[in-house]
Image (cartoon, rainbow, N blue to C red):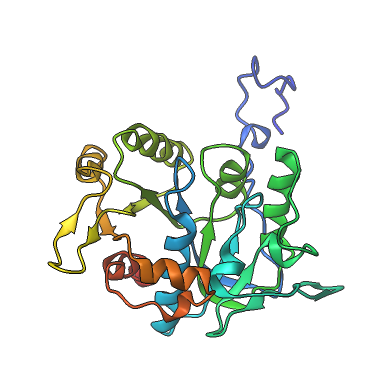
Length: 277
């Protein structure tokens, strides 16, 4: 601290260490070694963040990377159901052990800590945000190449906590084809820019459905505007995911790790390239 410091940074002209901004980034558990963290984000609910998170994690694990999922959607956790995970996570005096899927993806979700998966989470924002932070600091994640964070919708407490407390290397924004999405996606992009979080690109879910007879693509929600949104924000459109009854059935059966399709390959290649930087 400078000898000329007046202890009031608003009026003091001294250039001292007290004026420096302190990082709010939390250290992960001492047993954890996490290389890259990718947030899956949207400005509204119901667009398929959990689906994209799950599929990206499956592709990562298939490619030989050690993969983890943090389910930060505390009030609406769905990751355990998609992977067919049941029971409760275990822990000891050192911390909490993540639960592994059939193919070895490490998962932590509130539904792995509560007695019944249908129990509602009636918590205020700060408690929810604190829980997400503990998923980072108290869970023993081991060696992880890619951690995917399934974020809750919007730009509220939890996304802010994640961006401030966890060293996120980039985010993927999930959208749907509706006209309203343009404004909502832009809000998510602007928040990421404010927090200096790189936006890796956009993924559009429910883009179309293929006719089983003629294979024609039918735009159920009308013409997409995602290309325009991507161009306006100088972002890459990473993927368009179709409406696929087989994909929905796999989620309902807890068998997402068996999915087939190449529609997210470009998105995963974008993420995988982060390890080369």
